[in-house]
Length: 287
Image 1 (cartoon, helix red, strand yellow):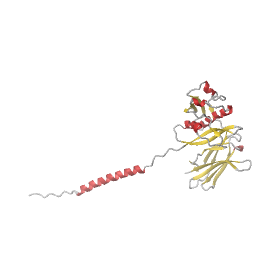
Image 2 (cartoon, rainbow, N blue to C red):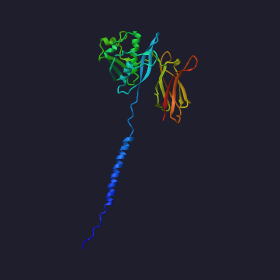
Image 3 (cartoon, rainbow, N blue to C red):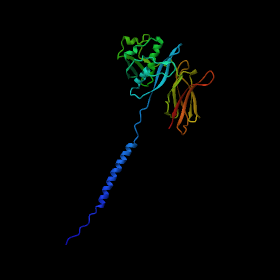
């Protein structure tokens, strides 16, 4: 007797295959979505460099400090010296002191000493007298010593210091290098703030640091919320009063408002009429 065969059920097999195809399709879609949703690389932020130019009023010459925005670079010290050559001063009457054809071959830093290697064109400088030449040298030194790892600066020309290089521009040579930072002839601006920087996330208390050339060295600060209300105010005395220049530092205790935005104002008071002068305004944020 012939036994009847049981029918083969192909439907579950078809459903299983369809399930695998759907799973693969959804996996590919998820992968593409993940790739599209992933954050794009953050563009590099601009670099802010403090540079010093020479200004002459006809009665005297002195240095002015400016903060310039430049493209990001792996060698900010070299970029800072290059900005002295090709940057555009924004202070009325300020001027570049290094010859325009000068190239900065390299800047090396070791044990706090920065050595700037210029091209030969740096020596092709018209005479500006001893005072102008001394300020020109100090403009480079002050610019580089803005970097915390640089305390002294020496110059080279084409990688060496020969007799012509030591003579520099004719009146003030390089015989006493390395040179150190000196802000005594920096007259403008009267006040600048080195901490906090614009849009920096502020802590509590807020550390305020900078340099001032003001009457009796008295520096005032106040922190405002985004509506202009005063959160806290304080004052301190710089290490030297005008006509000298001194450093100042103070800490502001405050209760951060909920919107996380504020304005720091640092200023002096006029001895003549009690008005606010030399005001520096810095936007700040807090968590």
